[in-house]
Image (cartoon, rainbow, N blue to C red; front, side, top):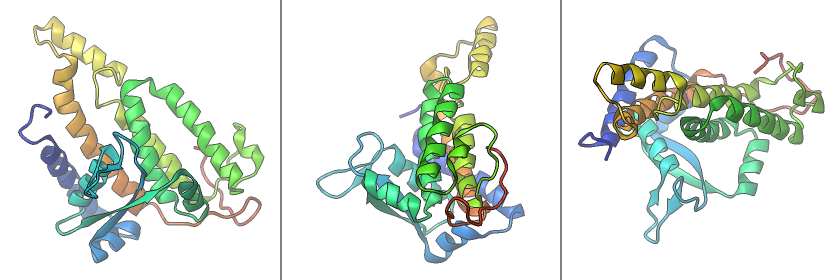
Length: 243
């Protein structure tokens, strides 16, 4: 437990409130509409990765990725159930090539958020950008020139992945006391004024709030960004902004 009577329930309630505020002014579309109509949120998870997604002998899934998917489903409205689809590493690569980049974006959002909560996010993002660019080059979505710093001709299908990475790196640092320098400065100010904020005490609030923020970010990545299939390098790739 995180100091609340039910930490997961708090995260879901906060996420639901924020989602309602966003959706009240935004036009529903894409993934959000499909999930609402079918009442099923399909999440692709790793096969047997302890701590992230693992299935026991009774077939019950557990792990951070599983909890994240369930929190997003709860925030999307009553009656939305989760359908967990296990993929091996090779299957995830095939899914990426087939254009399932939204799922890749969700995975990247969660992974970068965890890393950014424990490590400095600038080197984490720098390494991840190079890795993602390499994937896109291997899939022939972009030419090898994309590995350089001056390339800007990114296809629209690549944008959700970069946006998800941005959200994960920006928001993940809110989860822990060491996740961002601003957190440490704030804790120091509290200590000077006689209010000590330790690592575990910060977690009680940091993890639920960050989970809610990431849930809303996942809805934006899945619903607000226009769906698009990847195109081969040199094909009809639209002009994109430099990530």
